[in-house]
Amino acid sequence: MRSWRIVVVCLALGACGSPARPAGAGSDSGVASASPSGQSPAPTTLAPAGGKLALLRFAVVGDTRPYTQDDNANYPVQTITTIYRDIAALSPQPAFVITTGDYQYATPGSGNSKVQVGDYVSAMTLFPGPVFAAMGNHECNGWTSSNCADNPPTTNLAEFESQILGRIGQTNPYYAIPIQAADGSWTAKIVVIAANDWDQAQATWLSQAMAQPTDYTFVVRHEPSSYTTAPGVSPSDAILAKQPYTLLLTGHKHSYIHPATDSYEASNCQCDFRELIVGNGGVPPKSGDIGTMDYGFALIDRQSDGTLSVQQYNYQSNAPEGDAFRITPDGKQAQ
Image (tube, rainbow, N blue to C red):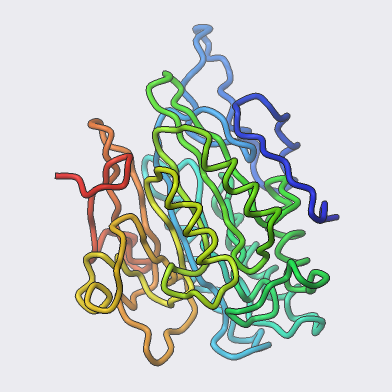
């Protein structure tokens, strides 16, 4: 059950106990076991509560739902199943997955949310590591302007929290995950914002979470900065502007777009190089969507010089395609 309006900031490694690993999520807890020689191998899979990693390598998936409301029969099961199977097949395998929201298109109270989120989870569990999921507008009541913080939770939000967030031990749709290198060479955090569950409690939490210093900060929010009708977009952007971060990972647009380098987006917005839209996880594109329409995901991989490579992957070939760029830990274009 959701701990409504209770906010806990817990970023320091070891400050909070790790939740028990949910059944069916695999046996690797992310904590290295001793090798026959007595040496602990560097961990490659992250625990649901965070921890240490040998490699900072992860995938980003976004927007998986039918085109029409309550159309359970046309949920993109095959597409999202292929995406998660592709991610699990990569070598080295990513340590975790980040998702940018919208796992359903269901009328609250209809019972269809349970079915659609269940379809998503069936695909998601093909990947053995944790999935750190952001809430989308369809996890509230469907409108971009919706705010579940002002109302009792909808069944859409309840199913998201129960079926998806419950697997990583989270009870609120906004949370932070601490990570550090196994050899102590870098630190990172994932900060997940719920723009459709926005209130002062979340604003206070976000300010505190962003103030925790790390070498890499990955902020996740469903709506891009241009979608100011979402109640938490402009207020969270104001908080983000006060602290350094590496990437802002969003969805909502049913495409894969790096706005700062996309000719259409760059001419129509003041786009930050740090923002990446990953919304091509299976929802059919609608009129006005731009960018890369192929379904797939993003792969983000730390390089030996400390920069991050960001690469689009096609879900059919499980190979790089289209947009690729490199970014520094402080969010600048790598030379």
